[in-house]
Length: 350
Image (cartoon, rainbow, N blue to C red; front, side, top):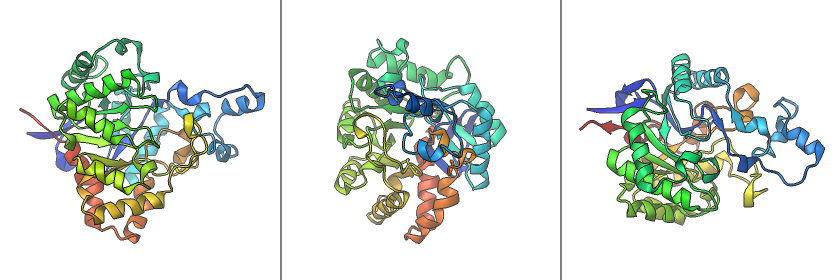
């Protein structure tokens, strides 16, 4: 029997509907993103302020530094935002929040019940700065066993099972801990058949390195989604080289058009949405429409509609017509929004 696992249990793949493959309902981003140099009192006061309609425009240029912007812990807010998504035609989201950055399976179940949007939860670990201490000494086999236990039995002492692996965090530091987690995810993906996604360092072209490691672990690359391909969309040859390896590419930063404000990427701008759309159109023209998914990675509070942003409904509500205007067909959009997510998320009982 084929099924997709949600936080309320298995559903028929045919009922998945339009799906955003990379979102966060409740999330607390790593301290590494928040760190600032110096102690200018006025700037520190701004970073500690609440989000308002008068400071939202300034937050846009300090997205990774403003504290309230990086923590989403309000269930009522997310329920309201998912209801906007539902009204725009959305059916399902994949929540890729992992232990250490705010994963809460019981809260996800409450949010799904209230919003009527289906939620697929995830097992995995994000970048090393966020990894809970209990996982830091595990080898790849021990960590893979933990992922597989959650898949079989449930997360955090609940009966709520993940339906996806990831997002597995690879940072610019490419740490030993992160490589162990990547290998473990590859093993769990191989052993369970569950799909997985990898958080790639956003401006690095390290997809080949990631795929090499997963290949060493015997992972079926057709079950692997490489996230955050948006910032490297200017390198078509790079994206084609990844697709030719058999993996899937995800453009999951729609609505994120701001300059980065952390690490080596300060003041480097993320692409515009129209550039994402045009790049996806080119890939579809080349015959890769079966390997592409989209989302928003909506992990910044100021981007929600409640705070004046476009919200999780952005692709369906604001951008769908621009995909069509740029030459995408309804059939191709259904592939990207429905059929490809269904393929990635579908499991089969033995």
